[in-house]
Image 1 (cartoon, rainbow, N blue to C red):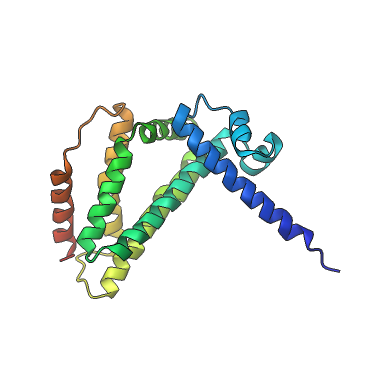
Image 2: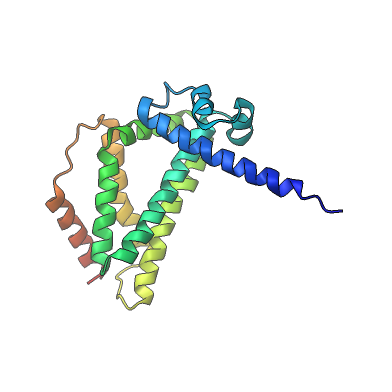
Amino acid sequence: MTSTREPAVDERLLRRRECFVAAAEQLFMEQGVERTALADVVKRAGGSLATLYKLFGGKAGLLEAVMVSRVEQSGLRMVEFAAAACSPREVLLRLARDLRHRSVDPAEIALSRVVITSSIEDPEFASRFYGRTIVEARGQLERLFAHWRDAGQALTAEPALLSAMFLGMFIYEVHSQAISHGSICEGDDSCLERKVAFFCQAAGLG
């Protein structure tokens, strides 16, 4: 006889995992990663410390899960931008504004600094983090460029290269803000518009 208990257990663990990630993200933003104890996450999310360790292995795994979740949220916003905007240039401008807003947000800067430190201290964390965040984000944008190419846009380079170049402009800003404690001024909205316009012209996006 086939048991029906295992799927129910998996579903409960999935819901518990989502609650842990959501609570950890809130707490990391409110009080910083270093000052957030795993017990704080359990208190806000419910469940048990044993379950949290089972799902994430510890704070490093929980931080990784939070950052992956944020990349997934960015991917959903990208889909929303593409559906709402009428041109590739407008989509990329909305995406650029979203990325810049995150790069100067104090909580984002704090998270970035922790990720950089964790990556230096733990090469395995760095490899996993890069594969599950930067590579995933680049893939999401690459698929968008490929969609525009298939729709008739005469791209001047392959979608993978354009994706890497576009994100590179903003990854630089994120790292600069993290290293400088948010003291670098990257220009106003008109500067951002000029950057996107220049990129679109070079990329063949009319």
